[in-house]
Image (cartoon, rainbow, N blue to C red; front, top):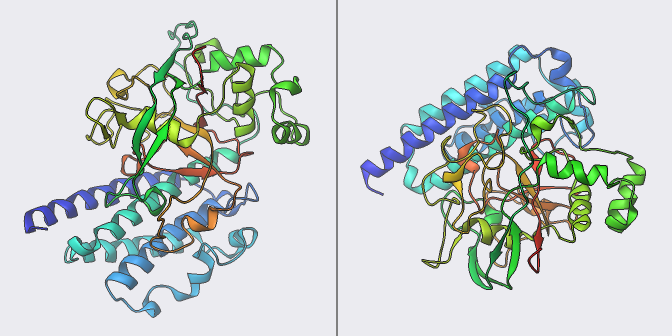
Length: 421
């Protein structure tokens, strides 16, 4: 890497680190100690832990592993607490340091990290720096999710509409034909996480996929037709989950018709699957979703983003928290994929039917616990990124994963079919 390109890379990383950290800290503004320490769900750590984990992970990989800083100077008394495999999640809140002390740790480590960036041999280290940036992006979104979980059930999540917002008729459900053939799946770029690698060829038969994510207007009809009461539309595992967790609508559902053309959210994979069965469709596999979102058949090449190679921006998709909520599924025509799909990047994550598994040739990086620990035949792949996601981890090949019962406020879905419907 020439000096000019190395300097350009450092400036790009510096901007990313600064912008991401500003967003992270904004989530903690005016947060009280109780909320800071409270574990609101057994599967998630308190939000205060995530802030400390972000900082200590930076210190471990950038300062210790790359800069050679002594472990003894990087808060060894908190290493076990903020390690992902340290204390049980239920024990983390009571052991967190006071908020002011944690802020001192966060700022101290970051100052040293950015000072090292100025002299770092970035041509040899770029992949790890990009991993650390994306690591914070992921925990930022998880923190936002946890802060939403702590709210009372039924409390509105979205920002209120302007009073002049008109009621809109539901969009017609359209499906796009994806012809049979091979495409390239995955990503070998320096920014790609270990589970995105290696890029590989996959053959798929012809299928049809929804142009848009499923909207609130469309999902409302499923509810009106007894979707939560009719066992025939549910998988065996889904119906069992529904009996054990009786619900009759998505999490944080708002029945106003003003949301007709916005993506439904807060649904588990089981609910998404039941809706697809109700229409005689299925949830897409990860490969079906990725081909429709990334493949440019005219030139026989994969696109990094649905529209091409330019990074996500507010004129192509809803991301980075700029809008502050979801947007109508047809709001970004310039963000379409080559096949004409809308909203495959930004606005809302989407469930797929695929288990989170390694690709052939998978090699963990930078440690087994990032991806490999979740190849457990339990987690399902989600694709696309949400309205709050940072652009540094938004690309078509990026893979998120959650257990199928998770009702995530930032997650929706679209459907596929083996024949036109």
